[in-house]
Image 1: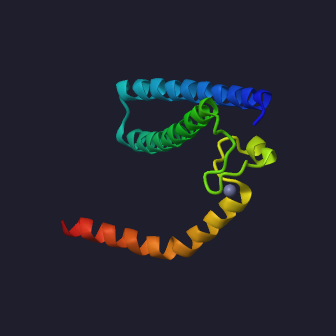
Image 2: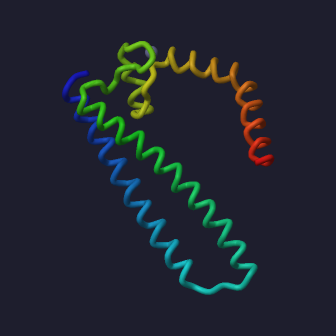
Amino acid sequence: MRKHLLKKFKKIFEHQRKNILFNDRVVRDDFMVTMDDRYDEVDQAAIEIEQSMRMRLCNREVLYLKKVEDALKRIEDGTFGECEGCGEFIELRRLEARPTATFCVSCKEDQEKKEVLTAMGRAHKSLGESFSRKLS
Ligand SMILES: [Zn+2]
């Protein structure tokens, strides 16, 4: 990939990383304030729901942050923009729409097809896991 493009993506990722880290800190500060205050039971239930929603958002952001950091690493390695499936370059249009993409369109489509095919098998597996957890 050309240098000026790499620079452009690096800027995008660094910006996204900053945004995520900043948001995460805001969420945590809010969380602390809520813990310190006293609420009655009804409010407490509402707060717990809200907190679990926030935690979920937080986890999703942590996952995205990892993707962004992986992408920055790939820029450093010089492997950014290469498809993990076939080793070809990922279409620039795809990278612009989804900068953290690690598969080209055709590999991604293949992957999604496989996922649909194995979805049944995976559903069986997770059922088995929760069943054995209940037994132990
Ligand atoms: Zn590919």
